[in-house]
Length: 72
Image (cartoon, rainbow, N blue to C red; front, side, top):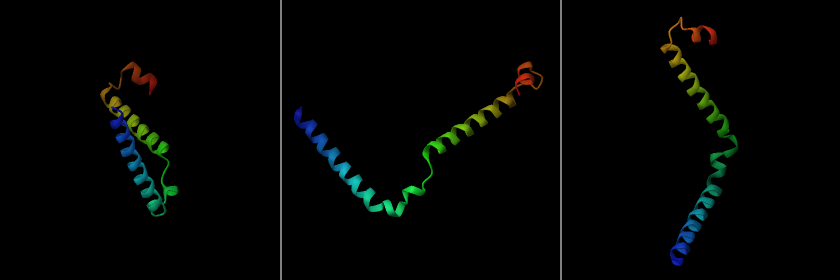
């Protein structure tokens, strides 16, 4: 049981070293500073989904429904 834990840690260490070397090698080519902020991208996706769902709900509602008239 101890040997498998050591093997897993060794494999993870090898993977971490590989990822580190790839990031160092290609970071100047990728220009990480110019990439957009992921939080803004996810927020925009959520807003688009909300708008799409609300538009679909508006299509389903009756134009003379009391809730539609009061809250739109």
